Amino acid sequence: MCGINGIVRFDAGATPVSREELLLTRESMALRGPDGSGLWLDENGHVGLGHRRLAIIDLSDAGAQPMKSADGRYTLVFNGEIYNYRRLREALIRDGANFRSHCDTEVLLELYARHGAAMLPRLRGMFTIAIWDRRERSLFLARDPLGIKPLYIADDGRHLRFASQVKALLAGGAVDATVDPTSVAGFLMWGSVPEPRTLYRSVRAVPAGHYLLATDGRVGDPVPYYDLTRPPRPDDSTLEATLEECVGDHLESDVPVAVFLSSGLDSSLLAALARRKAPEGLTTFTLQFDEFADTERDEAPLARQIAESLGTKHIERRVGKQDFLALYSDARRAMDQPTIDGFNTYMVSHAVREAGFKVVLSGLGGDELMGSYDSFSDVPRWQRRSQRLASVPGLSSIWPRLASLSGGRPKLRGLLRYGPTLPGAYFLRRGLFLPEELPRLLGTSAAADALANYSPLQDAGKFLDDDVVAQEGVWRAVHVMETTQYMRNQLLRDSDWASMAHSLELRVPLVDAVLRDRFDAAHFEPAQSHGKSAVVRRVAPELPAEIWNRPKSGFGIPVAGWIDETLGHDVPQGEASRALALRVLRDFNVDLDANG
Image (tube, rainbow, N blue to C red; front, side, top):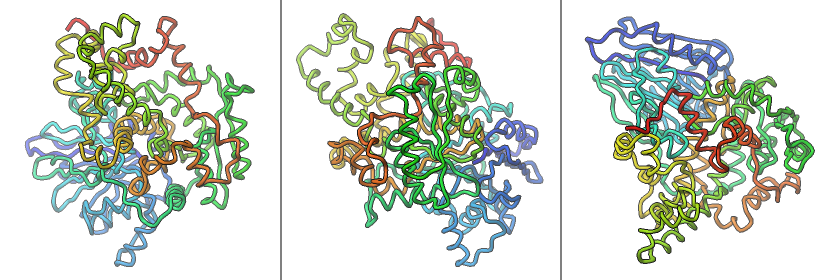
């Protein structure tokens, strides 16, 4: 895992690429790569690339970046891991390639030299890639299929800049830091800034599963190479075999790997599969919270029992509210973009890094994969109920007033306006503030402008059409929305900044394109009468019986309660997330103006 950045000058009349700016941007990401750094500028100041290294595979200097191809045509910087690089390397050797290192970076160079962008579907991993082609004078940028790793660009028409973090681009000093009011509105409505927007007008995210080519003085539009909406294409592989293959690939490392282990099903399944694929032993890691010790909410005893049954080396760290509060301010400073989540990951990542690990596996993505969020049942149920209510003559016009008189919260007042469509019902389930609440936060004019530029319902449903719902069902639709909204814009993005702030590589085996190309939430729908436990019991029968009926849990407990306490005692019950969103905006120096 690393931090990458670069600048390309497109306008011959523009200033040459600044070495100082490259260094400022690169060094702002030092925690992403404390094991080494590199910088490359061409001789005429046309292009420059920077890199901070967290050494995981091929720890020697042979894996240093920026890396040049043997013929000098290509120069590459890369963030992430290619888990199947050994198999790809062997195939390239059979095809006549010669390698100077044993790292995945050089494999990417060889693949690109042979196949160009067509190499991307061959890669199994999490990655962002930047390759400068000296002959064509072009820059190739690409992001992994599901958006695990972030990549941001700023194009002012004269220079194209890119980096692994938004704040890194701003740290260089040349990128306009004007806040985008539409992005602020998007954050208020979702609790995270919806891609490809960022908090700032001048910075955009490269979309997941896309690449772009910058050449001939212009930046091309992002080109998709992965279609998340494509139905799964099952082959002869069983679910168990595919999961084992996936987890085995994610264990690829030249440094020790740990596994986050709560007593929940996702992390327990992950630990069981990883133990099978790690014959030399595996380390599992659990947090025990002071507030829950020796109570029924204490996950540590069952996690300890799971570790014993699997035969892992188990590490427990006991933490309390004061430990969290000591880290809370640092976490808010480390946050790359506004979010109401990520603090739990920041805390456990801090503990794992203190224990000496550089790589950890997380069960993130299991709920999206297996359809075990409440949203998979709530969204279609809310849609059906909203449609029935909306069909009552005259009810829609008086519903907001009825809901207000009954003390209903804003989402109840918006039930008939948003609920009758799948994207609308999903927005009610996952959203934060409703559009009609924005004028009092942003001002009437600013809110109107923002909503003219961005619709949360259009965004939630951007990958859906009638065919997806009619042919593949509501479950598939909810899966697509959860994957492209909540998982990508919040969970994955927050996992990146919260772990990399501690120089920790967090891997997510259940967020895997190959796995999702064979199975997704709709595949697990028949098992829902018995819950996710039916699937986990079938795939990992070696887990102890006590796990099967345990309520859903995770590392977030009791972090949410601690955050609530920091917000003060005047926050109404159930409103903590909304209050936290307003605080986070203040941390980013965003002043909400209700007088617009």
